[in-house]
Image (cartoon, rainbow, N blue to C red; front, side, top):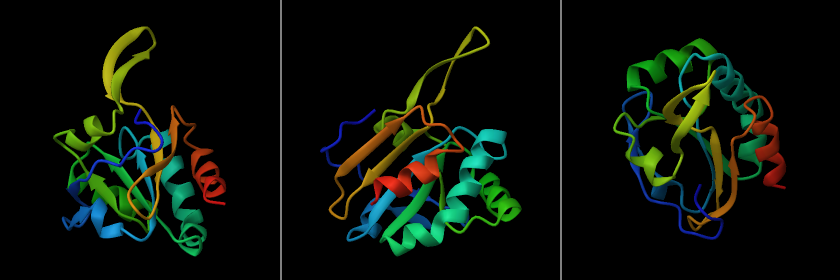
Length: 151
C-alpha cells in the first residue's frame, strides 16, 4: 500500500464507456480511488452499490469516486448497467495502475495461494496527494468509512 503524504501516481485508463480518464482530470477535487477484484462478484457488487447510493453525498463534499479493476471496458459497462452505477469504472487490464498503487498481492483463499487485487481505497486530495489509505477493507463498510474520512 502506498504511504499517506505521497503523490498519487498519475494514470490514464478507459472507463466503462471507453472514455480515457486521467487522475489529473480531477485536480481541484478530492478523489476516492478504490480498487476491487472483479465485476459482478458479491463483495464487489455490495461495495459498488453502496458507493452508488452514497454518491450524491460524496459530490456534496467535493469528491468523486473512481473504481478500478482489471476487468475489461465491456465487463465494466455490464456492471454499471446492471446496478445503475453513477461513477466511472476504470479498466486496468494490463494491471499497470493496480501495481503502481501496490494493490496486486499474494492472497490466500481456502489454503490456495494466488495473486490478485487486495481491496484497497485511497483518498486523494485536490493537489493529487494521498491523504488516507485503507487496505483490506470490508466491501459493505468501505463507502461509509470513506464518506466519514471526508468529514
